[in-house]
Image 1 (cartoon, helix red, strand yellow):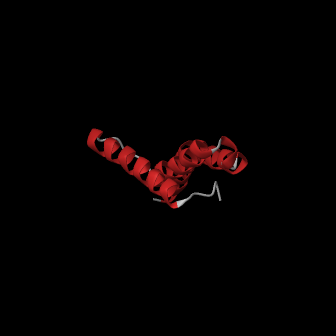
Image 2 (cartoon, rainbow, N blue to C red; image 1 turned 90 degrees about the horizontal axis):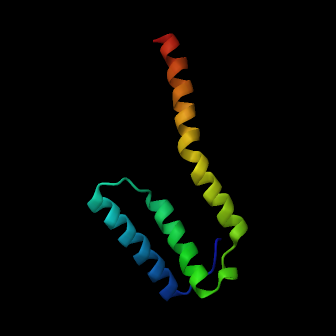
Length: 87
């Protein structure tokens, strides 16, 4: 768990994430629903009290976000070269 939320905080987090995704959709920018909602949950928890957020867990999540795109791209490159050897 990142933080504990009361119902109104959960509503605020869902609304914030949803509005962000809607803005990105209007602008034609691809966005991850998971990232938007996770970020908004962190924000809703931090709005109550900065220490209410488990930042160690949050750092792990953010680190995984940072390495996901280049990591997946690197693996796709490697697998493409390997498969191309047999096709």
